[in-house]
Image (cartoon, rainbow over all chains, first blue to last red; front, side):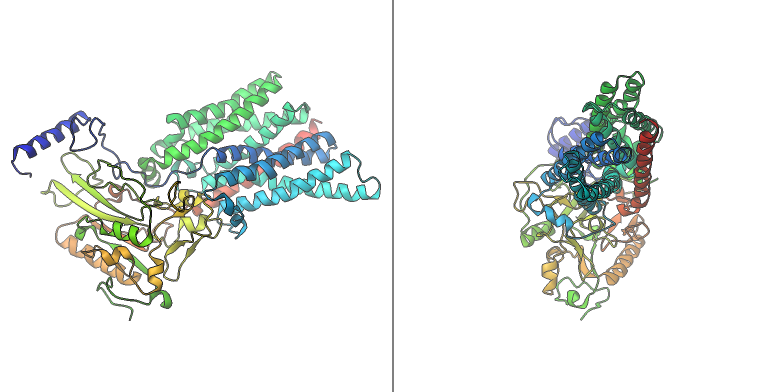
Length: 329
Length: 286
């Protein structure tokens, strides 16, 4: 197959040895000193591209989820006349959803100065486009809703004008609640409808996880701010119970090689730690009446698992075998 | 004059853009000599920046993979029966224990393009000739197309390269095509391994080439053009020897929009459940 010159023979010997031992001794086949496992696909190159997103995106997932669901709690508080709670929740919604979330998103853009191009088109087939519009609509409702509530609290327009104000407060708060639920859940659709195997295989679980983690986070922050009322405690129980169920779902609904990024590597540990913190641990702490600890545990879990899911995307997207396995079902 | 049959149109002027004719690339590794002229021509014409010189140790391929600054990529497969590397599935010509394959990879310009559907700015559009084009001045670099491409083609260009932050991929030399010129890679290909032309002609040419090769004993020759998946076919299709996995090509690529329905259903259900849970909380545990 090759010539019989001594140098060629030597090269062939080195190749054979390298393949047998799995480590390159000299130059010629692969990088010297490096291991040479039989790499899958084309030299182990990624088949799809892993996400380019950095820390801003998982933090936004956390922030947007909490802000969006805060507006839902604010609506409940408005209906049942918990004015102080409604105000606190709307502050959370406005700061988290109308200020911090857009800032985080713009920071992550490759060209931040072109952020307004997000509102150049409306594409219902693009979850990113829908998200941009949902976030805009949420901001447009949350800020006037907060202003109307504060005007009422400080009795700035007494009398007939206050009637108008309370209508405005109701409309904008409920509007923020509707868009808020979408703001908290669309992020699951966003990463669920991609070419990354570990993400699209769990596209049903992701919106449930992100939305419920958002609701629980909103309740947890409000509790930590001093609003220790049974209603928020119930929401905390609900969210921790759903998260516990999702933890079980995730450990039962395994897809082998295709979604191994969720169960292996550092990304797998992030998911596991996050889910334990906002699932069973938070539930147990709440059960024993340790509400502040339960709230902190839930918030940490919600944050860690968001970072976990982005890490999973990076690992899964760089793994050619996962892509092949997901497609060859 | 359009409709040149099975003859190559690589060296002719054309009016496909004006005539709204769907065009494509047919890339044939069996005549590729691995000269990388396509990579060079692409970089030069499109002024794609240098993204580093790294010795990969992977045969003669130091390009790596398609990306923001690599729009043509020549693959070097060393299929060695004895060592079992680079092989997916049975290999034809059993008496031949070693096979070297070169294939010039490129953006597939999908019939249903994941990047195009995902783009929230409308930066990515479909051109008159059916290719998928990123309008660089509109792209704000959100990175959603990167995870929406089932072939891992498009990527965001990192700083400090020129024009950093935007998403880039093969333009199908839209600027050249508007002037009746053939894309740079096809124009320069010395063996016509890359053929540019009308899509329907190319498909016929590809089928004919597969028949020829199979008759000559290459019974694992096949066209890589996933028409049966939700991508519904690609405009830059390939002839491959063996299975697509060996080339790092997804065996059954899907456009991610097919996952939208179940994901949104789950999102709406979660939204409603959260509202109900909150109302119940306030109603019963005031």
